[in-house]
Image 1 (tube, rainbow, N blue to C red):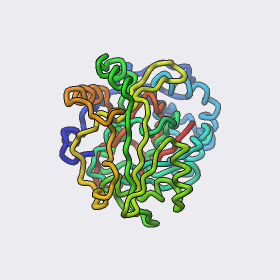
Image 2: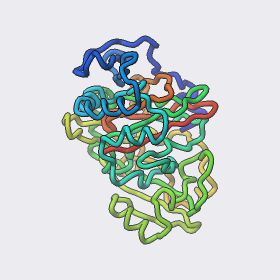
Image 3: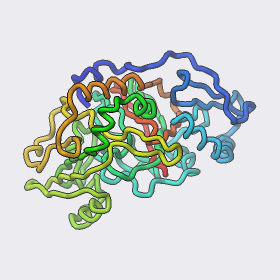
Image 4: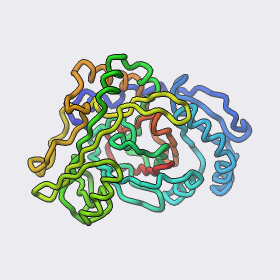
Length: 352
């Protein structure tokens, strides 16, 4: 999330051409047209034929009817974008995703600050608009995670702000054996820090360490926080200034329950990167925020650069349109955000 990194300076990296490729699916051709930005790349765009749906109720009923096919397309392509389905508000989004079961644990322990908007709908993030948020698997810091994530564009930014995605299936296939073996053998250690408790969380956040622990862990009670962290496999250290340091170990690869593919699922490649300056409480932290190999060491610069290069090559973006709804497979597809200017309203929901 650097302001000065090469990624931040190249927010258009990986952007495909503007032409769409028609693609055949089992969805009724008299109802929708399906297309891809790039051959054999996610996401699959699904758009009603002109005049097909006369009301939002009709469009939502069609989605409900086609859900088994949509599930198959999410699995096959990694992500789908529903465009033009008359979804205009957070409440519409909540209804549309209601056909999928929610991820019951919710956004517990996250340090990209967000609040509940309505029902299962959350803010996407409050991280500073000038930052490029690198692609990542949601909740890669835990060994439990939502199977799918839904994004809804209520209002696109005046410039930038695209939700970028990367195909982790392709990245995993292309990883050098030496990196795979090292990560698999040593595992991953994750350190996360949270600021002292506060009931005030407004505006943009410049660094994730500035998120209060009571907001991230949904409780003001230390004993309850410790219990929740223990359930998630995270060890708590309370720091002298009232801040909280969490440490846990996870695997660097996960086996997809449907496809059986071993998929790279960690942010170890960001270790050692120049980040924005941490908040003042960093001096009180038991350990600095970061992801390392299980023995506490970082990847070599050569290995880190190799992974970042693969991610760049597999990253795609396209302009959001108001009303777009994207559902992605959280193991197969990583997501991030380009920096932006102007107002932007993107909402998110975690799905089982």
